[in-house]
Image (cartoon, rainbow, N blue to C red; front, side):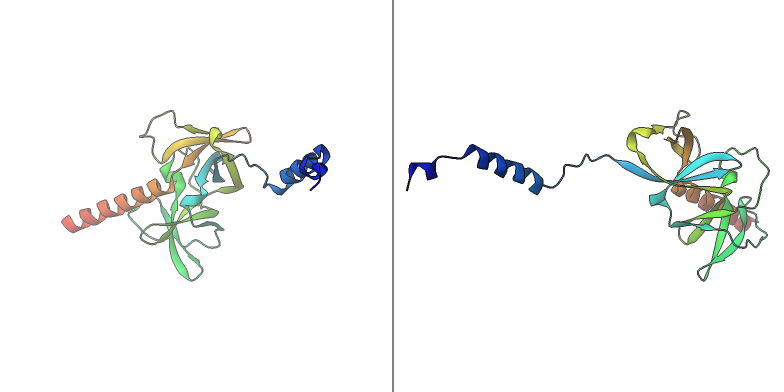
Length: 180
């Protein structure tokens, strides 16, 4: 073996190092994001966590029903299911007149139910650093955090907390009717 074969060629070493860099997968900066659905209730901006809902649907037809539950707007049919629809305006401070919801977020409780709202503004992936704790503390209804989306601050409505409130109201009405 010649001495030339055992010494390393600097050009081939640089070429091998250069090629090796392109063979590696690109480095990704892992940034935590939250997928949010931007909505409006009574003209005010809000958001829902996408992971807490089954989907969003345009309200086709809402059939009013008589109910002691004040936030129940009625029922609607979707994909062969009869879904009770609750006005989200009843769970937030809304000074606007109560309108028939035009959209609904489907959530899974013991059964699928709809949370009705007025406008759908889109879906956004929001970096974790744009999520802030609610200033009013933990007892501020169904809002625990707010998000800044495109310069607009939106309270994030926690769908499981709204479902708990619906369930609690239904159970309270049930207990009241049993005692009568």
